[in-house]
Image 1 (cartoon, one colour):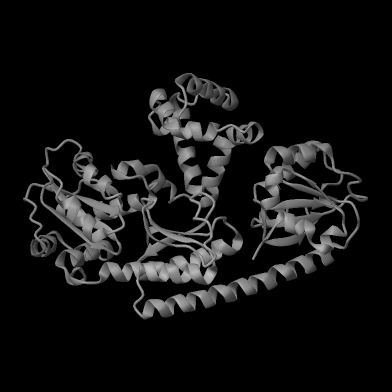
Image 2 (cartoon, rainbow, N blue to C red):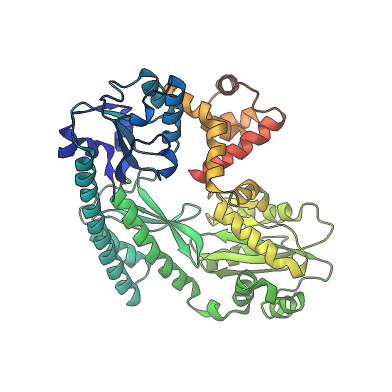
Amino acid sequence: MTLALRQFLEHPTVRRAEPAFLGRQSDLDRAVTWVHSSEIYEIAPLLSGGEVLLTTGLGLAGTDAGTRRHWVRDVASRQVAAVALEPGRSLPELPPEMEDEARRAGLPLIVLQEVVPFAEICREVNSDLLTSDLARLRRGDELTSRLHEHAADGAGLAELVNEAAQDLGEPIEVRTLSGQVVASASGPRRTAAVGSEAAARSVVRTAGAPWGQVLLGTRATVETTFLAQRVAAVVGLVVQRSALDGPGAGDPGVSLLTDLLDRPRFTTADQLLTRGALAGFYPAPEQRVVGLAGACADPRRGAVVVGRAPGLGPHLLAPVRGQVLGLVAVDPDTPDPAGAVAALVDEPVTQQSACLVVGPPRSLEEAADSLQRAREGVDLSSGGLGATTWRDSTVQHLLTRVPPTDVQALVEDALEPLRRWDAEHGSVLVATLAAWLGHGLNVAATARDLGIRRQTMHQRLDRIASVLGYDPGHGSALAHLILATAAARQVG
């Protein structure tokens, strides 16, 4: 369980210390997961994020201003909720360079003006955190148990969502990856509709793959986010069950595509031809194949509609684990086979409010590789409607293989100047840069996408170059920023 930072400051034990808050008002909504006290200088690597760090500054006594600034940056990089300093013999007052660096790094500071033993603050606040944690876990277990009982009794997705909304007293929506709402319900008090931005949300997975999202409530809190995760877990089971209901569960096409995902080494080219023929898939000897993977509200219907696209070559499309999966045969002399197939199916995919990714062209014996790459592309996609190729997710695909700490470091190193400028001036330079890079440096297209004038777009680009200190569209800088903005999307 967590408390908001404002709740920490209002805790009776903390109030006795007469805390003076130094930070932005928005920082008061930061989540506090634990209260920890330490006087060692090298504390940052031992922090995991969300802590309020209590200190008298003993580890900083006798250090110079530069060293103190480094300590602040180091602690801020661990995503702590705040640092609470009790002035005393070590540091008679808060050094101005620490306050300045904390403001730059977005780290809230709290000055404790009266002496209250740190052990008492830690014991009282952490005890309340643990008590709330147990209550939250108990409520989540009870909710999950009730929803599983309804699912076992044959409840469909709409019934399950309505039951959860009535139980929690909050509105709930279930959406596909493309954003299409497939089930929704309001709470017993007819709470306002779910806010697409403010609601708590959790990914719905079917057989381990992302299928959609559950949105709960009108405001994301620790409680609603936790409960959204519990609802999403049961929704995933119901969606997977419905996707496997009916004749498709024993369909040879479904069986083949499932084996290509789960046991690619055991599916040879000969086996693929034999089993594919049972499903009506007849690629010519010289043809190559591309894998398809898509997310939509009705995978069974989606497979049928996409298969009717004019000009599409021999193909196998079927609903598998809540997604549309398939293979399409392409002629060896087709320029950009993946792009050609994406262009053919883009219209029907868009009409189905779906997103679909086409994998790289492969020989028949390597069909599983293309199918799996397409499926990864769907998992990594932004959820936009229409058909794209695996190339659109190449950077994200590579970033998933990089340690999270390195990805976070890349974002901070490349974008921190722009983030700091946005925070201080209320601008949107980071979002503008990402949109401009996404449109291939096309100023006019980016301006249209952002709903601004070209002149405004040029002014923003000039400001971006000024803040960064270099031309963002030049040489290696361009590749660096493309990678950094993609990493920023990955870490949220």
